[in-house]
Length: 320
Image (cartoon, rainbow, N blue to C red; front, side):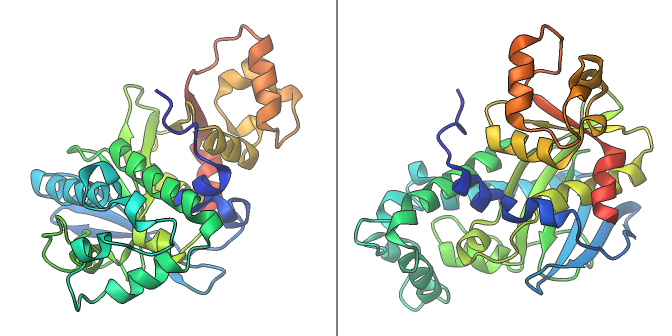
């Protein structure tokens, strides 16, 4: 079932930070650095966003059950935050027609909770015409959570508002079920994350489960980092192994993700079979409409459901 089809472009922009996708490629980074802890290497970098915010990037391995548990907990807690079906964060109540939190606030924030007032202000501040977009965006984050891989031997890349000093950990002990205040207190430093894992082809790794921390989305901070996190991870992955040649993303049904990637890379920066099928006839930055028209008229066996990007091109976005 195509769960992304109903999403609006603005919702996808809100979820993933695509609003500055093209601009992100031209912004500078500090050098990629390596940090070794317990025989494991963490790759880090820092950049200053156009907003002046300092974004700290990290790519770390999930090398044992403890690290798997840490990231699985974040995935579960974020899903609980967003998923109205679990009843902990009832979106339909929070974004009510009256534009207030209604009875949901008391269930997720006890009186005197640290973040209650901020959350009330954030939600009440959403224009009534955009509440459906915000609700859809939270549902989209929940979908990203489902796609996140947290198995041993996978990697997680994330962006924090604090310098990276080691492996990712919550700011406070995690016991967030049914308590939004605890969730914010534990994860407020984490702004965006993505899982990176190997495929059967040793020259290809895959990205899934890219999503912003829902409070970062509501606060509208640290925006425009979707391409940044892909490019940073490409640079880190090339340090792990020079055998990697491509990053792939499952864009089946995700029209906007595919369109944005294709508009950011020329035909020669994509999977070679695109060229084998004559796709070089398009301009260097060809449109999704061009590609869809070409595919509908061609019998060439292009990769189905995925968009492949050459790592040499993707990592260059990090270096730019």
